[in-house]
Image 1 (cartoon, rainbow, N blue to C red):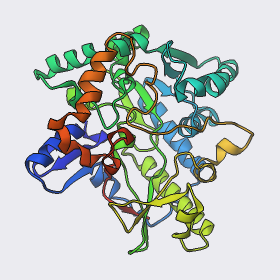
Image 2 (image 1 turned 120 degrees about the vertical axis):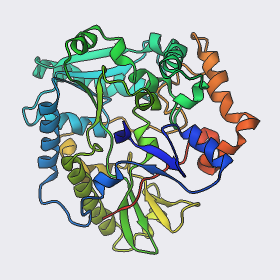
Image 3 (image 1 turned 180 degrees about the vertical axis):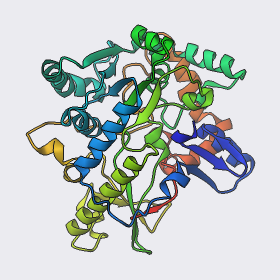
Image 4 (image 1 turned 30 degrees about the vertical axis):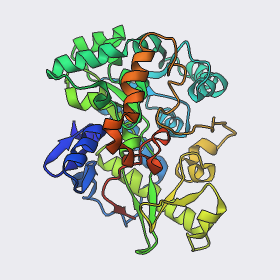
Length: 392
């Protein structure tokens, strides 16, 4: 299960960022996030692939379709997942199912508003145009409210007694734990697995993540832990069960096609930002919302590409062929916003989550964790831990 990445500090390997923090306290030394380093290092990132982005996206859809018996696309309706969906539909490569996971109690989160005003309208149109594709709406509220069972079952399976926090990734959303056990709660998925079918759930992780070394004058891409664990939890890796769905990342998987996608995106983005800055990338910081210096990693400059639409037009040109609209205000924080309806509420086990997860972060005995958060502020969420540099 190392294909989803892991942390290494000395001779200690873990999938839990909190175990990494504890080990660092016991024995401070360099640590790293390893994300298929050997695989992606086989490729020359300085050479732009000859294929077009459209060809590469099509190739990725094709290889997924050919590899699995039953293919489910997780679809939020954002830039990344919309481009993933078009890679299938535009090329006559059809997934078996498009799945969106929401809570019936949610009336406040960005996810709720995105679904209400954008995504469900799009899915209704897709359902009319492609009747061969099943559109599934999953209500995760009951599973979220029963999250202690997920932890209990995991501890029993691993014969451990770990505190719940160690089964969370850098974001403490229960939604992410639920995705890792969803195959246990959908009857037709369970039947497919019983029949030994290869069930794949595909998540749109992620566009190229650019940084620029001002001293070396090098543009690089890094794979980051926060972005990976925004779509799963360490439970998937720690249990390593085979009789379950396989989670595939559409863009970040260790395949040749995905490597080419990242390299191609990187070259196009490099040219875009360089042209935008008139050759002097430092000026982008002054333009606001495009790039910033990171205090602890200067001379590094990082690009704020998650919701910067001109950048999205470069790596996902298909999305802008018509006047398609996207829901944009998606701030990233410790929870990722998706479970805003649940936190510190009166729903079952919410107060236990508040006590065992949220307040644990502020406990004096865990004060050594704080240096791993943005500016030491826990509510801002974890600083990203990055893979090795892939120089573009």
